[in-house]
Length: 226
Image 1 (cartoon, rainbow, N blue to C red):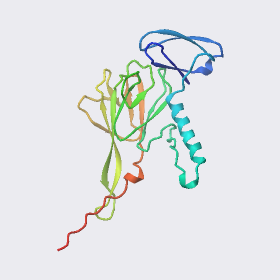
Image 2 (cartoon, rainbow, N blue to C red):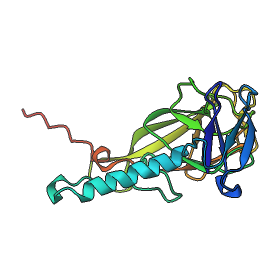
Image 3 (cartoon, rainbow, N blue to C red):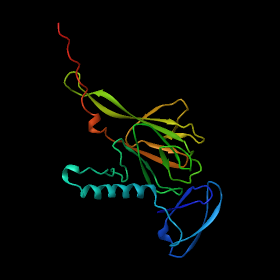
């Protein structure tokens, strides 16, 4: 998959370049500003997708690490179980449809604002799609760390887990979990495998694990003497 950039609004349009031969001319109409423009395969500049750019960055990091001495070696980011997810806090899988290719978007602690990528929109979890029913700030997944009691821990020892809370943007077409639409005031706890629908786009939550440095047991308070 490759991307071309609209010369008027800088919106990216994704297409499968393997279906065309070198030298073939294509005409696109930007869904954002309706500008028509043409390209020629093998001549015009094509851009890689965000997923390809992230994977290339991971490979470059691994190559750089391999050239270092053992004490200098750093561990490059790893792909998640679904491919492309580089975050220990989990990922959102964007299911492929007629508007976009399959994508995996890493999550981070705090608010992850999900919406359609448009130039100038400042969101941290953009989807490359031309789905007109997905708003630029459609919904938010908040990732937080919450201590919870182990099944049979030493007294006072806690472990941390990840909590995922979904809310609507608010959006024009709504955010659905199953057949239930979220109201503006709703804050819904979701878990691994939860299916979310925004517009004509389906998302699946891939839960992660809290990093080890953040899963250490809570320290015990020293007892007062006397």
